[in-house]
Length: 374
Length: 112
Image (cartoon, rainbow over all chains, first blue to last red):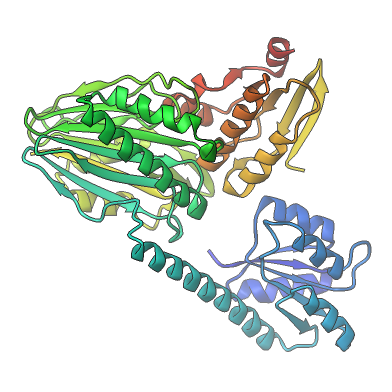
């Protein structure tokens, strides 16, 4: 999909000409003949670049720019003025409104296209640079919300697949908490939201979860439902997390007995693929969203397993996808696809690279944990 | 306008005019819900008939709005929830968190 450009001009001929040229050069162009229409378009879809005429009846280009700057969601969209006037006073006025540049309507088409391409390339480069700098700092501070290694136990092997959304860290968080040679907790949470905001809060949730697990274990409590309720209690009273919510799947592996217990908070069901049956079974938990109610109504389920059985924990990004321009959330379809892959005896890596391929448009960060009984 | 509201029988009926409700609208929508103070304590009925897809950011905004309403002794209900969205709510027990009704009339009658 090409970069999205919004063209605003009250002259339909000018608009059509520009649209044709930019579309031919791979851009996805939408047009508006007034500032009011431009805002309607922006309300539905954020654009990568706005090119606007200055002189228009009703609201002019300067007014348009001023109103964009007042809108937190729209003020950072790169903005170019496109006008027949080359009076310095107009150019100065436009640039003072933080417009990136000014294009004369007499500029030859080739130069215009080159200028648009350069601006968009510079924006992408700057954005990537900023993200990389933030990631570097996070790495230095050892801030990781997803483990980078699989976990090998005596009777189980745990593998993780995690894919970020548009290369931004997100709200999915995963942790393995090894208590001793017998017990290990597996944590999969998903902070509601996307990108940096959700990523930031995932560490607060993780800290509470780690502490609650440790404190319960110190007290000799290994009930995942009771541990969930402890986590829920602290999050419920934390004002810092007042309007931030997270789902959670909590699994305890007993590596001596080969048992798994599970409790969940508004998470997606666990999926178990039975090696002997070749079927997928869903395990639905009853727990409600972390911290919303004082009592989260958590239950726990014992999940037995035989050699080569596989249990999956997943975040909602794994079942969210876009097909033919329509976004959908479909667990049934995902389970069907997973089953088809498992019946072919593929490895976890082969399965994830096939299911989460780039052809299928991903709409959120997504995580899948496989617990395989050896 | 993405959201519009009217008052019927001391209940605020909110229409969400979005087919895809996601991250881009979630902050604005949360603010819109927080700013809906026409009725005290707040009684909100949200008409979701236009929404075909909802991401977790927008669900987060709905949940935050509900918590805000409950903290003021009010109530919030959802109506005309699309089948796909309802399936996700049921899967994640959010149907136990929100009051969900089939029609506006039914919800207004319950909340008024």
